Amino acid sequence: MKYLSPKQLGQAIGVSESSLKRWIDDGQISVSRTAGGHRRIELPEAVRFVRQRGYTVSDPSVLGLTASDDITGRSDTGQLGEQFHDLLTRGKDKQFIAAVTGLYLAGHGLAELIDGPLRTAMARIGELWHNNPDGVGIEHRATDICIRTLGYLHTLVPYPPEDRPLAVGGAPPGDIHLIPSLCISLVLAEQGWRELNLGANTPWDQFVAVAEREGASLVWCSMTAEPSASRTAPLSTLAQRLAHLPAPLMVGGRHAADQMPRPPHPNLYAANSMNELTIFSRGLLAAHLAKNNHNNGVA
Image 1 (cartoon, one colour):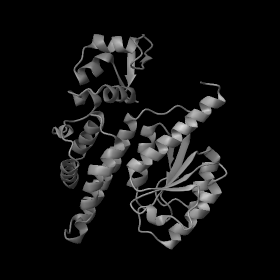
Image 2: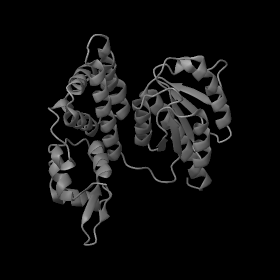
Image 3: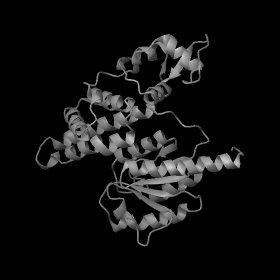
Image 4: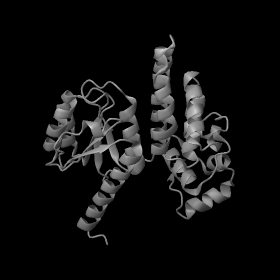
């Protein structure tokens, strides 16, 4: 875990060290103390404060980032998609990580970035193999950069308390795509869920086994491949086996709605975008927290 001193965070956002210390003492920023009593701010807490207060990170090097070529000043999805595409196809990993992180620090939501410029850029890169002999190599390199970027973003999201509900999920058998499940787990973490990503090509029975063992309150299944009967049929069975937890089964992906069995199962839902997942998971989390508060006698 990376920690910042009040002076370092002040340097990053262009405010005085004394202001940071005053906000800390007012309870606006959570800190830990060193053995000598010095204040230290966890990086996710610093990011939360920057996003909440709308500060511009004037010195990203303090956060371990390189310059982002002023990409954070752009908000048009199409323009950002072009920028993402350019950085990924040229293999500019440090610049890409800095650009995406800069947009996140500037207040852009993760679902917004994933549904918009990231999806646009990767979709275009995925078509390169049709007419570019180097297309496969470019796509593999871009995928690796995206995975590392998502991993870094995960370090910036505050880890939720242990009493928060858990979401478990992954991609089903035969689905080898890594990025969609990483995106889902990251978006859920941003919403305040504890999350456990089982990754690609997960056996159907493991969704149930892990959800039961860990006491999951939500299970997701990321289905990127084209719809097929071999995938649709197990979904209904999986939803039925999860109903006793109870843990709704959320199917995500571009073809999520097409994967739904007929007739629909009452415990089975579809999300065609990260934004739809955000709305669903936020409502479910709010219901869990309200129930816990009621059970604990909190008004």
